[in-house]
Every structure is written in C-alpha cells, then in structure tokens.
Image (cartoon, rainbow, N blue to C red; front, side, top):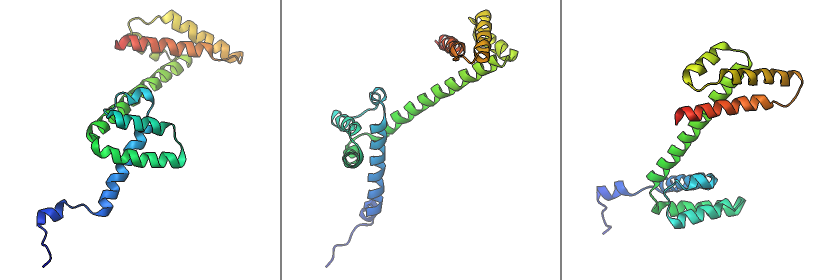
Length: 171
C-alpha cells in the first residue's frame, strides 16, 4: 500500500520551479554583492567563506563568473539573507542621499551663476558662515572664464565652496 502524506507535509514541500526561483534570487543577491565596491562590502554581514568567494567573483568574467555566482548562490542558503538585504538597502539609501545632496549643490551653483539673488538669500539663511563676497567673486570669475572660453575653474571652486558649507552645516 502506498504511503499517505500528511496534509502539512504536502504544503511544506516546494515545487521544483519555486526552488529554482529561490535559487535564482540568491544568485542575483550574490551578483549584487560581487558588483559592490570593496569599501561597501565591509558593511555587509557575510561569513568569511562567503566573503572570500564574493571577492574571488570580482576577479572573474563571463563563464567563470556565472559559475561563481551559482556557487555563491548555493552558499547564500547558509547566510542571513535578511540581514544582507537590509544592509544592501541601507547602502543604497545612503548613496541616494549623497546623489540628492550633489544635485542640490549643482542647482545652487547653477542658480548663483545665473545671478539668482533668491538663492543667495536662501543660502545665507541656511548657512550662517556664508561669505557672500567670496561667492560673488567666484560667480564673477565664472562669467569671465565663460566669456573667454576658459576652463570652468571658478565654477568648480564655487561648487567646492558650497560643498564645504553643506558638510560643515550638517556636522
């Protein structure tokens, strides 16, 4: 007589396609880890063995990398995937914050170069240490450089000055 499976056992069994999807998701997570810069990889909670395999994957290309990602995916079963994905999400959010800050600085610089006095007032309110005279001088130099078709040295200096103000204002 054939053995009869309990209903709970049937529900716990995963289909072959479900197992394949989970394995592919772990491989994709492994690929994200391989693509991370070294400095960011240090913030991801990985076992030494898995970290070593991820670092090996950074040196590979094409077929070897594909096999390595499969191996990393199989190792991920023994890792805390939730902690890894949380750490990756935190890194992405931090990066997006830096990108937003960079774009804000660009907008301020471009508005100052376009002689928008409202931005100068906004910056004076936002940053107590704003040197208006220095900013005006950098803007004038930017206009002169543009008229003479010279490299935008003063525009870069203005961006750097705004960046320093922003970092001092946050700290």
